[in-house]
Length: 224
View 1 (cartoon, helix red, strand yellow):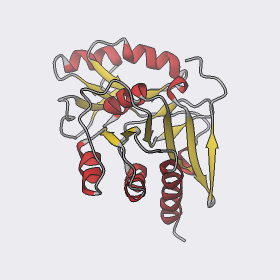
View 2 (tube, one colour):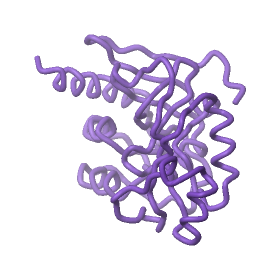
View 3 (cartoon, helix red, strand yellow):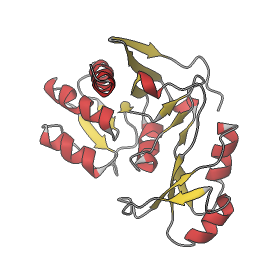
């Protein structure tokens, strides 16, 4: 089996396991990315009476095409569960998300969920987080914001269209010595709409597939 096929199989197994966590009448947050693309058909096949909120237009279109009910996220205050992938998962359950540029909406949905479930293949488990960290920036004062972050080298703009909310996508490429400290610094920088560092306190569990088996990992404590 080609290594890429093995990773894709792991993504599918993790997604299938996470779909079983959804029950009738739930309000479900749907993430964005290749692992979530495996989740959607499995969830749709269960034919549950659920209302979904999507973190990107791509996810919304895929979900609706499969027959899932997708509502705008403007009247719901809370979600029962949100399921999403991650680019990196550290042993202390800090995450990096946003390779696809949807991290602002993904974080809003994760914060609104009673239970935030992260689904990953085994290659997403890392010993420590390394850059880049996705950023969404305001277009107004863009160069001033980049200077506040550090330098042009520390904040590289992506060749990508604006986000659905009009933000500019970029990546922080500096060192991540302390994820909590960096998250606080980025959050306090004027012009940074959101960053892709997700703290352990948001994570309810990580569903990871490895060598044909599925594991459920739970944070033992999440002070930050």
